[in-house]
Image (cartoon, rainbow, N blue to C red; front, side, top):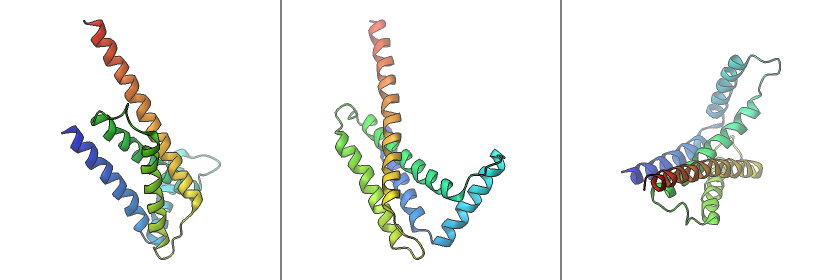
Length: 149
C-alpha cells in the first residue's frame, strides 16, 4: 500500500507543478501578490519580501517536494541504496524542462533557464534531505535490531 501511495503522491506533486505553469499570467500574478501580502503581514519587517522572491521560493519549494517524493518512491520500493543518482537527477531535470516548456506556451508567461536551474536546485535539496533522513532511520532500525539480538 505504501508503494502505491508514494507513487500517487509523486504524480500529484508533478501535476501540481505543471498545473501552476498552465495558469494564465494574470491568475499566477494574483496568487503571487496574495501570498506576498500574507507573508509580509506575518513577518512585519522593515524590508518587505518582494513578489519576485516569493515566486522563486515557490519554484524551489515545489521542486524540493518533488525531490522528496522521488526519494520516497525509491525508499518504499527498497531501491534507495541501489538508486543511480544520475537517473534521480534526470527525473528532476525533465520535470523542470517540461515545466518551463509549458510556461512558454501560456499567453503572457515565459520560460527561463534560470528557473530550470532553481527548480533543479530545489529538487536536489529535497532529495538530499529525505535521503539523509532515510539513511538515519535505517541506521537506527539496524542498531535496534542488532541490540536486541
